[in-house]
Amino acid sequence: MSGTVAIVGGGISGLATAYFLQEEARRRGQTVNCTLLEREQRLGGKTLTEKVEGCVIETGPDSFLTLKPQAVDLCERLGLSDLLTGMDPARSRVYILCEGKLRKVPDGLASIVPTKLTPFLTTDLLTPWGKARMLLDVFVPPKRDGVDESLASFIRRRLGSEALERIAEPLMAGIYAGDAEQLSMLTNFPRLVELELNHRSLVTGALAKRREAAHDPGRTSGRPTFMTLRGGLGVMVEALASQLKGVSILTGRKVVALRGEGPYELELEDATVLGADTVVVATPAYVSADLLRESNPRVAAVLDSIPYVSTATVSLAYDRSSFSNPLDGSGFVVAPIENRRVTACTWVSSKWPSHSPPDRVLLRCFLGRAGDEELLHRGDDELCRIAQDEIKSILHVSAEPVLKRVHRCDRSLPQYVLGHMEKLTALDEGMSGLPGVFLTGAAFRGVGLPDCIKQAALAAKKTLDFITMVDTGISGGTASR
Ligand SMILES: Cc1cc2nc3c(=O)[nH]c(=O)nc-3n(C[C@H](O)[C@H](O)[C@H](O)COP(=O)(O)OP(=O)(O)OC[C@H]3O[C@@H](n4cnc5c(N)ncnc54)[C@H](O)[C@@H]3O)c2cc1C
Image 1 (tube, rainbow, N blue to C red):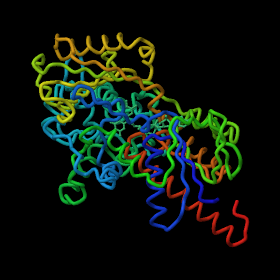
Image 2 (image 1 turned 90 degrees about the vertical axis):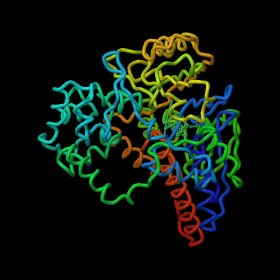
Image 3 (image 1 turned 30 degrees about the horizontal axis):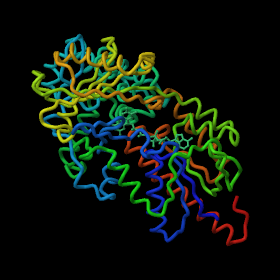
Image 4 (image 1 turned 120 degrees about the horizontal axis):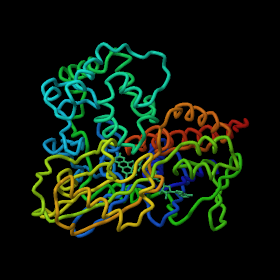
């Protein structure tokens, strides 16, 4: 019985947990009886690809960062190497909409820190004072009290307000559709905190890192910074599902409660009860809170306190002949001070040419960010109209799109706001009251796919270790729980 595992949630976190569990159990010679329960009829959660009229439309993630290798490694293990494709460096340029104009992010900007002088001095993204203030970073003393601070506070302190409004808010807070005044530095941008601590200044730290990389090219993977799969990331979901041979996958099965102290009982919406020794909960934090509310109200309260932001994406395809803009980059992000409704736009046909026919331009517009979610209550037609009007004024395209698709992602992006680190500690402590139950997913230690996969590998390992511990305890005749 001790090898019975239930995984709740069939997004990338749940699927990857099942995959690592199967692979690691095989490696250890352990037998596990694993069931994955997914509320929807389909697997993948936020990761969903639609194919419409030759266009690959991603409704959630469209790529992964390779500096964190877990996603690309998993694709390789799944046999998808031939489908991996990197972003062409010539098209990797990002624009920022600032003062009504698209302005290039200067070359050599590492996160937000300038490492190349000429592009930095000649950019029109910042005023001369804004540039001078950023360079004053080398004289700003490091903050060494170990207390977390917001992204806004960190950037204002080190690089000035202009760097915050024109670069950090659109580029860094934008990834999370978050509020820079609330996002925690320690949990969202730990590398920048380390840079300040270890090198006294961000600029000197980033330059030192660049020099180290130049002297030791073997330290970098040689992979393009962002990669995706031809055919879209849905291919990864399909590959995972098809390789989970020993896992019983039940879709259309919503779990409503987890009860017991081990072994556990999972109650499904249709009143079925499923028993499991070990449970991995891979649902969004607010769902996990509901599942655990009865068995561990303290943990549920912490999970409830992790905020989420809702977003929507509007994909628009145009005839290529309607565009005079060369779209020589991967897209643009919008500074919140611009007061626009579109927060970013990916030029999909430039970023991933295999995702659209050559005679089409495919764009994906993002709507909704922390503090601007009211917009998402409007109907699909209105969201399309808003996106189209903004594209018209920013990219000067007057033609009508030949294809429009709206996708809503309700409460889709967990926010690691100030205090997130303490929440993680409280969760670790609280979960010790539920031995054999493990939480994983985007809500905790990284929102991006590589971090979700990394956490899934850890959840699988903890699950197998727990099973081993219980079995050893039983065979040794001692109480194991
Ligand atoms: C618009 C958008 C764009 C993004 N872009 C990128 C990107 O380009 N690159 C990147 O790395 N990351 C990106 N992300 C982040 C990344 O996609 C997500 O963090 C990640 O997919 C989350 O995976 P997950 O499995 O943890 O959660 P989810 O995908 O939310 O999966 C949770 C699963 O649990 C199921 N479930 C919920 N309740 C129950 C229940 N009661 N019983 C059973 N099952 C249940 C859900 O149906 C779902 O399938 C993006 C996110 C969004 C929203």
